[in-house]
Each structure stands twice: as structure tokens, then as C-alpha cells.
Amino acid sequence: MGAPPEGPAIDDTSIAASDGAAETAGAAARRRGRAPRLALEALAFLRGQIRASELWLVVIAAGVGAAAGLATIVIGMAAHGLQQAFYDINFDERLSAAVRIAPERFVALPLGGAVLVLAGWLWTRVKRGTPVDPVEANALRGGRMSFRDSLYVALQTIVSNGFGASVGLEAAYAQLGGALASVTGRALNLRRNDLRTFVGAGAGAAIGAAFGAPLTGAFYAFEIIIGSYTIANIAPVVAASLAAVLVTQAAHFEPLVVRISAAPDLSLSHYLLFAGLGLVSAFFGVAVMRLVGWTDLLTGKLAGVRPLRPIAGGVLLAGLALVSSQTLSAGHGAMHLDLTADLGIAALLFLIATKALASIVSLGFGFRGGLFFASLYLGSLLGRLYAVILNQYAHVGLDPLAASLVGMGALAVAIVGGPFTMSFLVLETTGDFGLTAATLMASIVASLIVRETFGYSFSTWRLHLRGETIRSAHDVGWLRTLTAGRMMRADAPTVAAAATLAEFRRRFPLGSTRRVVALDEAGHYAGIVPTSAVYADHADDEAVGELMILEDQWLAPEMNIKETMSLFDRTGSDELAVLGPAREVLGVLSEAYATRRYAEELEKNRRDLTGGD
Image (cartoon, rainbow, N blue to C red; front, top):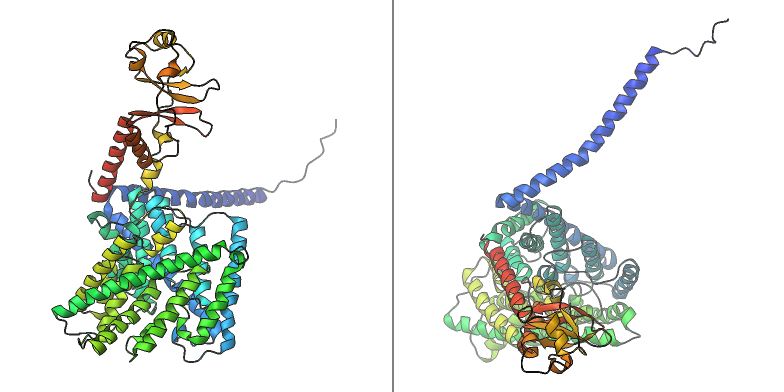
């Protein structure tokens, strides 16, 4: 037999090369797999450390603050870049202080409205629902915010401010700072109260960065975003605010409020006069907030205007800008000019009326932003007007610059809230403790009057117009999750309303249950039968339905603890049925159990606030 045919020659070198390539590819794959694993391990480490040590919470909060500071810089530069492009202003020039703007450039305002209309239409095709701001997130959602929604809000605000509408960028700063903190906190699996603190730290850091004022940012977080001040939350909030301000200082980002030297000699009579300014600011602030709400409701009800109202608002704002260019944008440059200008009563009234009208039109017609800086600017004008009138007619010798700064803080408190926030803003602006004390007095007066007569800040007022009932960022979300449907006992004993008492006694011996739910012929709720009534002196052949109570009183599964306890009080019953939409019985809930669950949640909330065990 012949030898078998030879196969192709095999080169040992090629085998070694292919093995080496395989090993290299395998090593690369292992390295690629190791990177995500290391990231997950690092994240797990951080989660454990944060829960074990408050120091790590402060370190991460400082990082969030630095990120919020960078976001503030980006937002501010983006809006100012749009203003430069559309209004032909210099880089170091503020739009509301521009000396000369060609009238044809005011077409940017309705154009900005058109951009918002298009963006809104595209957004509704992708996602439905209203984005959640930091106040609502902390009050109702345990600090949970969507970064995508927040980025959309920030872009809307940049467009509104950049195209010249009379809105501030502070809403975008706080929104994106809070969202960055919320996303970071959720990635680290923070507890509910820690996540709320993080959101406040992020939002406050952004505000502190915008004004170059860390104390202002910290107290903005405490008073407006978190709704409380505790030893447990002071360190992360202050660390975040300081980090944000340091980042903006390193980047040479210009703060929104310039430093002013003001050292007036204040007497007791001046403090009393400033308290009167707080009263005036309160009523003016309430009027502005109500007018914004009414304008929003009115334009929302006009079927022909509603879809295009930002464009219509832009046309109105262009007309106002032709009358006074100081109505453009938030008013930073205008306030810097007017703080030291020698303005008479007529000029001040004109500036107050036009700026207030521009802000009302901007927000009422659908531009995005807030009233934070507009309230500061209007407050400075209102305070100066107050001083000029008193000096001219009562000869009291009130310093107009001091009155401008006190009015700035008082009106901002009336509209935005936060007496300490605005007082520290004046302190960090002037370095004058006497003027800060006067601002605090006026702010407290304004805050008290607004709470008594109106009850809302601007952010909570807009939520109220949407149907919410919250009045601050204090955590009430747990009240809404504590519903009758969550607390009820599903295994409710039932009996037919047409059954006899003899059958009832056979099925439910005395002592087995206190109440039984009666059902009609269709199996729906008919009422509740007390067991004790059945075992009273009644004939065996009587129908169970004769002894029913609470035929028209029951709980819906979505009713929260407040509504549930209110119904228990009204009916005087210690147990109620929980029914579905078709009156089907879902379960029963006792007043004693609902009270105990409420007390447990209150105690948990107290421990979170105090940082106790």
C-alpha cells in the first residue's frame, strides 16, 4: 500500500503567534471586563462608607457642589452668548444696561418664543408630564429628580433669558444643580433624607456660585429647598456651596451682584422705617405673584393663544423693550446702574411698572425662568422709591442706597422666601452688619405678612396653580404614600345583606370579629354590620341588611393618611371599608392601625431630621 497523502506543512512559529494573539485578545477582554467590575466595586465601597461615616457624605457633597458650579458657569455663558449674538453687545456688557440697541434686534423676543413653542412640541412627542423642580422633588418625591427633564428646563431657561425675556437664570442654576445631586445620590443609594439634603446642597451650591456668596447659597438650600436646618445637614450643604464658589472664582466667573460699600449710620427710627418697607414689599410681592398666576390662567384658557403664547408674549416684550431696554433679561446690568443713580419719583415709578409688567408677561405667556433676580432688582427700585418719598415729604433722612439694599432683600423674601438667605446676600454684598440687621427685620415683616395674607412663595404658588397643596419644601411625600390602599387589611369578612341573622351568627360567633362587610346582590358594598348589634335582642329570621351602618361612607384606596383620619373623625367609626371604583370591597382599615402607622412615620421623620438613632 502507498503512503497516505501529506497534508499542508504546519509551522510551529505560526502556532505560537496565533496562541500569543489569542492570549493578547483574551487579556484585553479581561481588562475590558475588569473596568466595569472595578467601577461597581468602587461604587459599592462608597455606598458603604457614606452610610458608615458622615465625612464621606460631605466629601461627595463637595464634589457635587463643584459640578454645580461648573454647570452654573456653562448656563451663564450660554445665555450671555445668545444675548451677544442677537443684540450685538460686548462680552463684558450686560443686556439690560446696554447703551444702544437697534430696534430691529427686538425681533429676537418673538423668535425666542417660537423656539420655545417648537421645543415644547418636540418634548411632548417624546415625553409627557411636567418636569419636577427641586422644591417639589424634596417635598413630594424624596429628592428624586430626572436629569433629562432638568436639562430640558435649563435649556428652556437659557433660551428665554438669552433671547431677552425678563426672567432670571436662577431657576436653571438650581434645577441643574439639584438634578446633578439627585442623580449622584441615587447612584450611591442614599437614604431618603440624605438624598433630600443632597438636592438642597446641589441647588444651593449653584445659587451660591451664581452670586459668589457661599452663605447665601447654603441658606437658600436650608430655607427654600430642604425646608429645615439641622446639625445633620449643615456640613454637606456648606461644603457644596463653598466648593461651587471656589470653582467659579477659579474660572473668574463674574457674580450676579457686585460688591457695594454701604455704611449708613442707622438709628432705631431707621429700623422702624425699614420694617415699614418690609410691609410695602410684602403687598407688592403678593400683587406680582397673583398677576403672574392670573396671566398664566388667562392665556391658558384662550384656545387660539395657548399653543403660541410665547410668541405673543415675545411681541409684547418687544414693545416694552422699545419703551425701556432695562426690561430685557433678568436686569443685572440695570440694577448695577440704578443702585447708585440719582433717580426721581417719576423715573422710579416708570422703571418699577415696566420691569414688573415685563416679568409678568414673560412668565404668564410661557417663557421659562424665575423671579429671583427680578425680585432683587424690583426690590432695589422699590426701596429707593420708598426712601425718596419719605425724604421728600417727611424729611426723615433715610439713605437711598441703604433702602435699595434692604428693599432688595425684603421683596426677594416676599416672592422667593428665605429671610436668612436674602439677609446673608446683603451681608456678602456689603459687609455691613447693621444693614444686614435692617434687612433681616424688613424680611421677617415681609415673610410674616405674605404667609398670613397669601401663604405661598412663587415656586409653591405655581405648584398650587397646578393643583398641588404644598407650601414649602418640607418633606410631606411620605404622607401621600401612606394611603388607605397600602394600610388596609385585604381579608375582610363579608356577608350577604339579604342573609338572615341566624346565618350570620352561625358564620361569625360572638368574639370572632367586631364588624362584617355586607354585600348587595351584585357583590358590591352595601354597608357594615356590627357583630354586637347582631347578637342583641333580634329575631333569627331578620335580614342582616336591617342592621347595616355606614352605607354611604367608605375609603378610597388612594386616600392619604390625612384624608383617611378626617373621614374616621367625621363618621365616628373605628373601622371603615376600602372600596374600588365600582364599589367592590378591597379590604378594611381600622383607625387604630392607621394612627399607629402615622405615629411610626412621624417618629422616623423626626429621627431623620435630628440625625438620631
